[in-house]
Image (cartoon, rainbow, N blue to C red; front, side, top):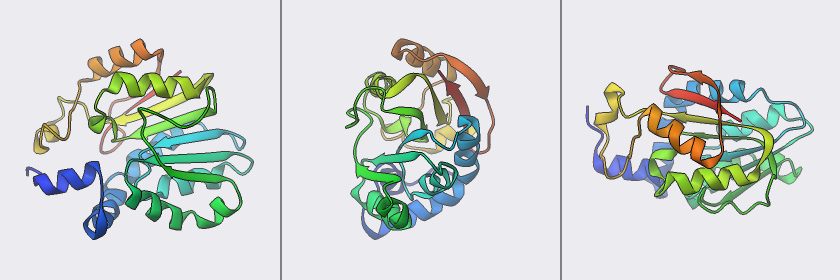
Length: 202
């Protein structure tokens, strides 16, 4: 079934009551892939983790539970989602273990090598120029760090259900080429991790 255009627009940049409703649906739909991405990161308790596109904030919450001596930063282009995620993670934010802010992967407001790990799940479709965003993520991830990308490849059967001017899907090979240009090497590949594929990168 083709996803209605207004739903697709809300998925890319949630706003208002509808945006919060969409976020709750997305939380259920993407939970398996997000959990698999966290597992693939092989988090240590003192890691410094960046999540790009935090949405509902549940993955930030789960990561903070694992990083007992670490730090989680989450960015999202949607102010509605940062408020929603902020409420969910209020205690960890007060403790200084979580930092949630409005932001874009094309300009990450953190210094070079700020993070040991990073993840982005189902967000790359909305990046205007993925090559720029990936280079920016490479900048803030330490050379020995790990980045996990969760995505639906263009050849997937359900990719055609989404408006092409909002969801810009790329093939697995196209993504690997862009990642290599940004300085990432594929370490592990999970072609079917539940509602998408995963690439673990160094």
